[in-house]
Amino acid sequence: MHDGFFQRLSSAVGSHGPLCVGLDPSAKLLSAWGLTDDATSAERLARTTIAAAQGAAGIVKVQVAFFERHGAAGYASLERVIADARAVGLVVIADAKRGDIRSTNEGYADAWLSDHSPLAVDALTVSCYLGIDAMTPVFELAHASGRGVFAVAASSNDEGRDLQTARQASGVTVESELLRALGVADERLGGAGAPPRCLGAVVGAQRRPDGLSAFDGPVLVPGIGAQGSGPAELGELLGAMSHRVVAVNVSRAILGAGPSPDAVRATISRLASELR
Amino acid sequence: MHDGFFQRLSSAVGSHGPLCVGLDPSAKLLSAWGLTDDATSAERLARTTIAAAQGAAGIVKVQVAFFERHGAAGYASLERVIADARAVGLVVIADAKRGDIRSTNEGYADAWLSDHSPLAVDALTVSCYLGIDAMTPVFELAHASGRGVFAVAASSNDEGRDLQTARQASGVTVESELLRALGVADERLGGAGAPPRCLGAVVGAQRRPDGLSAFDGPVLVPGIGAQGSGPAELGELLGAMSHRVVAVNVSRAILGAGPSPDAVRATISRLASELR
Image (tube, rainbow over all chains, first blue to last red; front, side, top):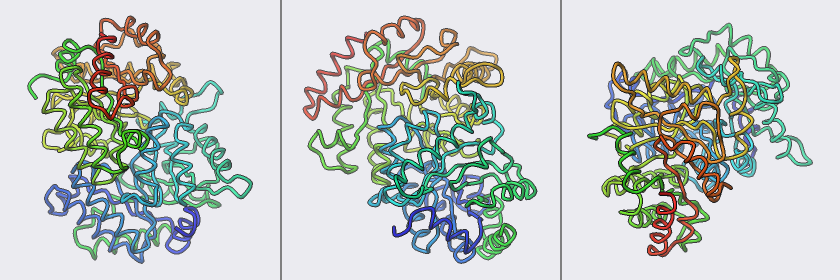
């Protein structure tokens, strides 16, 4: 790792735009590709898509759940998928939504953000029901290893709204407090220097949490297409955050074009230029 | 799976009391046991502890983070640890705090709660930042396969308090709303019959969320000892929930007695009788 995560992500977005290719080998998509439901097939779908993304997009996001459902064999496939994507220069985000108490989070940090781990990625998504401060070991290892974290602030799905808009004792909503706390933690990691901006947030395309305009970290936007957000909502969000580095994840629209590698590549190229 | 999860858990607690033996092969504990920091060692620590627990305790909880940090090799070890614990009749809880949007949760449900998965356990912990209703696929597969779920309501760590006590638009706190929603979801799964009580909650020993006394599902209590809760707080909680099935997790006090299997077994036996 030479540059920090923010520099690598910025460079990828500068070269190819914000498109993040979602690698989600769900049971349904394996079936749609005419593949058997096993780890080998999940790996094949993902690596076919990585090959199609090369040169057309700069970022991929692996959905860990769809490898974990194949157990250890799925994780062995996931290790090869991550290695493959990193070898061709893609920025790799592991979408795992990990999060626990502090001592357990040391384990998750080791798994995804340490140089010697076979699962090491550029950035990890985390979910903070147990408190943002409990994520400190993850934040610290991300910074130390030149990697990044995306904490879910305002998710794209409607089921999350009641919790994420609940008001803490301070009067601030959960999602806004998370954005604020991420900024504080990021500044602290920077010490006397510039903030590393290694701590990003997940914000659905249709969400506008208070504090978003003041948030300086990278933003990962899920849910384009399948989760109900359209290009108009996305355009507004991107406009509102034009000073920031944003990655826009698209999964089903891309993988649904398969199994033809050419069709997958054409879809990635079209979406990449639409988003640029 | 012949009985449902609630029956198996009740039977284990009836025979051995509420002690749940925490299998947390952290880097620190591997070192304290004089073991190298790898998947083989994590497996050895866990399986030594399972052998020590046999006949003395009825429930174990594996901390998935401490296997995930070894990648696919760690998951291969975890599969053997789960198989080992189930083979000797222990109720096995996977502490993974999984949680995402609905379609992704289908993947996590498959991983931990489906009969054909090599990671299949008796119950899975989940974390609901993305909303309790998004967990429906996990709840439904737990019920269909005779397994269980523990959703974190009020965690033992202090960093979680601000979020968990935030008030939703209805005026109810996040933790209390979660308990209420778990009860509603559980009743719905029961259909015209009795509630299956396959949906439990994680509640720290020192926490008393509103609605706890009305919550009928099983309760998993973490954080005894190392996380600052003492026997007095635990006694009060157990007294307040004497009509309910409760599992009390103890990890560091047990694993810290190692590496001598006899010392681990003596500690488990002592704690089991103290908690009964």
